[in-house]
Amino acid sequence: VEIGIIGGTGDLGTALAVHLARQYKVVIGSRAKSKAESAISQILTEKGERDYLKKNLEAAENRDAVSRCDFLIATVPQSTALESMKNLASSFRGDKVLVSAVASVSKSGDEFHSDFSEYSITQQIQHLLPDSINLATAFQTVPANILYKEKPISADVLVACDNKQSYAKVAEVVSSISGLRPLYAGSLKQSGPIEGLTAMLLNIAINNRLKSPTIKLNSF
Ligand SMILES: NC(=O)c1ccc[n+]([C@@H]2O[C@H](COP(=O)([O-])OP(=O)(O)OC[C@H]3O[C@@H](n4cnc5c(N)ncnc54)[C@H](OP(=O)(O)O)[C@@H]3O)[C@@H](O)[C@H]2O)c1
Image 1 (cartoon, rainbow, N blue to C red):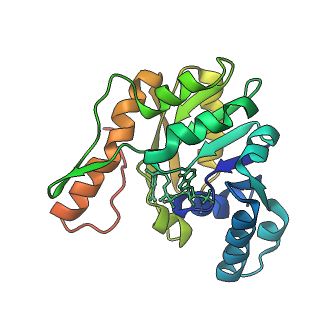
Image 2: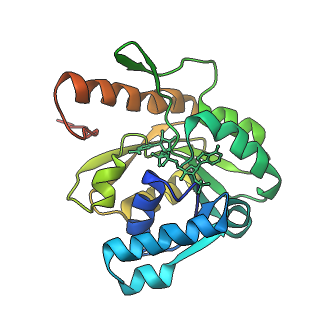
C-alpha cells in the first residue's frame, strides 16, 4: 500500500509521514513538488538519515499523489480544504480511501468553537468527489507536535466512515502508529462531532493548563 498525504508538508502531514514510513511507502503531497522535497530533506535532517525514511518517503504534487495512491490522507487547512479537494477531484478514481483529518475550528472572543452546519467538512468533500471514493474522518484529536517528536503517546483515534471495509483499511493504518488505537465511531454522520472535538480540546488545553490534550476512552 502506498499512502499519499495531501498537504503533507505541514505539521500533521510530516508527523504522520515519519511514523507511517516505518511500514508504508509514503508520498508527501504538496501544491509544489519542490516544497515536498524540502519537507523530506528537513525530516531527514531532524530525524537522522534513517534507512526507512530515505527509502519510503517520496515527494509529489498533490495531484500525482492522488493518482498514484489508493489510500490518501488530507491534512490541509480547513479554510482551503473544499477548494483544494475540488481542484483535485478529477484525479480521484476507483475505490480509493480518503481520510480527512481536517478539523472544524473557529474562534470567537477567547473561545474556540466548531462550525455547525448541516454537513461536516468530510461530507462536503464527499459531495465534491466521485461516488466510488470512500471517505473517512480521523486524526482530529491527535496532537501533531507530540507525534512528530515521537514522544510516547496513548490516544484513541475516532474514525467515521460509511462502510466496514474502509474502516478496516483506516484502522490498519492508524494501528501501525505506536500508541494510537482506532475506534469505529460509525457512519459519516458521526464525522461532524469528531471534527468538532479539536475546538473542544483547544479550550480544554487553555482552561486547564494542559499542553497537548488528546482523547483516550475508558470502558469499565
Ligand atoms: N496540527 C495538528 O496538531 C492537527 C491535529 C489534528 C488535525 N489537524 C488538522 O489537519 C489539517 C492540517 O493541519 P496542519 O497543522 O498540518 O496545517 P498546516 O501545517 O497549516 O498546513 C498543511 C499544509 O496544507 C497546505 N496548504 C496550505 N494552504 C493551502 C491552500 N490554500 N491550498 C492547498 N493547500 C494548502 C500546505 O502545503 P503546501 O504549501 O506544500 O501545498 C501546508 O503545508 C488541518 O485541517 C487541521 O485542522 C491538525
